[in-house]
Image 1 (cartoon, rainbow, N blue to C red):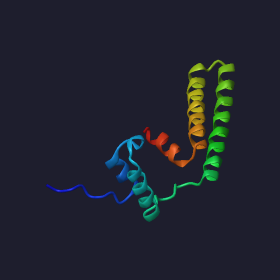
Image 2 (image 1 turned 45 degrees about the vertical axis):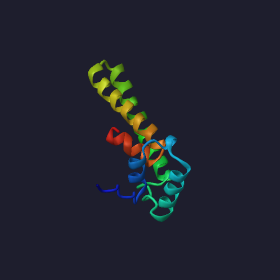
Image 3 (image 1 turned 180 degrees about the horizontal axis):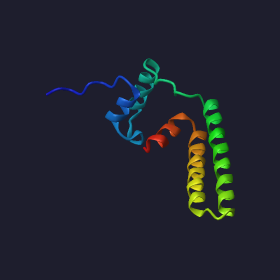
Image 4 (image 1 turned 120 degrees about the vertical axis):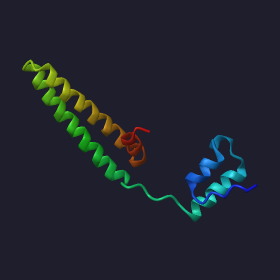
Length: 111
């Protein structure tokens, strides 16, 4: 019988130990030590960069909704619906980006 290999990164530790609300004090200490020894890689984008991306998505949503409104006024409901759905999607991307890169990435990947 083999013993489980100790976790060498934070993700593996969480996978092996399950729900953090059920961890012992020793589990928390081990988690903190692993984080000191092998910290996780920084996010791909900083928080300020994600706020810029969120603002870009918000501007895109406004522009798309403007087109949708104009098309609706001209009687093009089908095309307006397409633009309106695009505006909603851009607004969702903006909302996800405001929380930072890990949340944005999980939103993009549908996690």
